[in-house]
Amino acid sequence: MKFHRYHALGNDYLVVRASDCEVPLTPTISRRICHRNFGIGSDGILVHEDREPRATFRLRIINPDGSEAEKSGNGLRIFARYLWDSKLVTDAPFHVDTVGGQVTCFVSQKGRLVTVDMGQVSFDSTVIPVRGERREVINEELTVNGTTVRFCAATVGNPHCVVTNLPSTEENARAFGPFLETNPLFPNRTNVQFLQVIDRSTISIEIWERGAGYTLASGSSSSAAAAVAHRLGLVDSEVTVKMPGGTIRIEIAPDFTIRMEGAVTRVGTLELDREAIEDLV
Image (cartoon, rainbow, N blue to C red; front, side, top):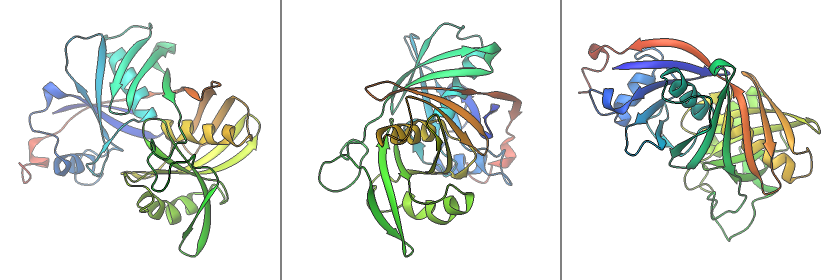
């Protein structure tokens, strides 16, 4: 199988066309491909699903643990760049369908900058989802390993838990992220961000990504964290999100519709040898 490799601020994905897959991308095979010692290695696989009519493109997002994500901001920017490199789109806006909803993408700067209209953020517990009575999940608390964690929950097509009372450090992301991701409060598991507000137009986050673990950058995490900070009145409607891998720019409309802008880098093309997965097929 031939893969195209890209990274978005250090968050790297493999892109493959569904019709080029010689074997089904089962969870077991996907885990092997994403493994950084026994496979090609990546933070996930983006599958370009062939469909008719071609007014929109269909994206399937596979996490490195073999599970599937509803939406990925960095994944969408990478997929848009791949479509542009493949001459399937131009600089004009185009649509991409995901399980988490349809988005509109714009490619500029010869493919190196991609803008995505991510959709509307919701804090509604029944939409995210979060267990319990229907409510906006704002400034709630959980106890994790003896520590009280204050958080807000949101969805931008996939679930997020934004922690507001712990320092935004890699250590906290690794220490608390796994337990929050799998907490029973979140029936579909959740992505986790540790938020620090720098000023009215800047935040920083550290990320524990559902199905992937500690991550250098995330587009949907940036969208959710910026929306939470805006909902709490801590930032204005245009926010720069700083992460270990780099920065993403977020615009928040009055109805909490999100526009995300960030860089994408093409790494190269790789071919998976059958020998790497022959014990699985």
